[in-house]
Length: 308
Ligand SMILES: Nc1ncnc2c1ncn2[C@@H]1O[C@H](COP(=O)(O)OP(=O)(O)OP(=O)(O)O)[C@@H](O)[C@H]1O
Ligand SMILES: [Mg+2]
Image 1 (spheres, rainbow, N blue to C red):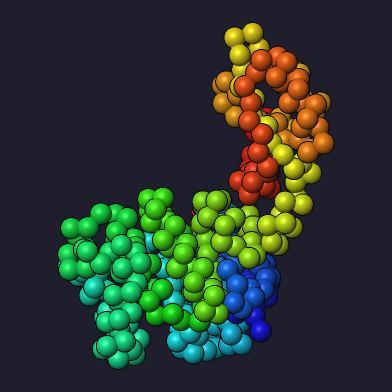
Image 2: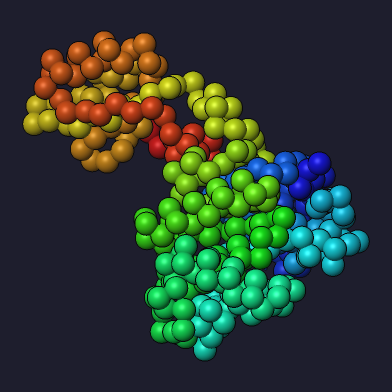
């Protein structure tokens, strides 16, 4: 079964004449981590709000675990949990209050709620501040309260709309670890993020949304196939060789993108790397060679086509 099946979904907000979603048809598999990627305003949050029964589609149909979102929102609400994009914890309440009370509202018994609250706060490194009101906590700690609340319920479908925004690199990894554990418990996860490393590490399936439409979908291997090149080489200028020299010298090896005033990025094929490296060494240029990342794929698909 699919966790979510969306057929020809469009959304035009009341005060707008533009389609925030334009004929979205996609299927999100159960038990997977599915990631929506797209530029600001692409429609990710709109799609999540429709799937989580907070917003009605203008046209089209969304089915969550077999139930239509417009006909059976109550049934769906019992099976989902969400970290909203712009959520804020209540100022006067502590991390413990937020998570524990939320679990109680969701029907957990006191001792189970207390145990789950302790576990999730510990994993998010919030246990030591569990009794401090949210207004006295840092921005990242407040965000982690929202993550803790949504994840503690262990609902079968979890929506995470930019869950790691504002989190430090260690905290982000703690959240990733919980996300992976929840997937292993069979929980279906819909994630949005602007951190391409996060998407690459976590996603089983990726949907790239642009101007309200799904323009590409697949796993990482499928997405890598959308770019003709496999390798990128960043080359720095030297005192003898400037940017335009670099472009002239290496343009024929692949696609050149200007990275900054003193370096260019060349997308190329694995089999030309040896020859190119030899040339670069010979010319005494400093450079680095790395495989193509999701970041490159994303920019190629939805970025400014005139980057070079
Ligand atoms: N309440 C609203 N009323 C009118 N238009 C809206 C509303 N919410 C969003 N929009 C518009 O819908 C489009 C999609 O917005 P949405 O928030 O879904 O984008 P997003 O992909 O989540 O972007 P971001 O990465 O910035 O969070 C945008 O053009 C936005 O201006
Ligand atoms: Mg959003």
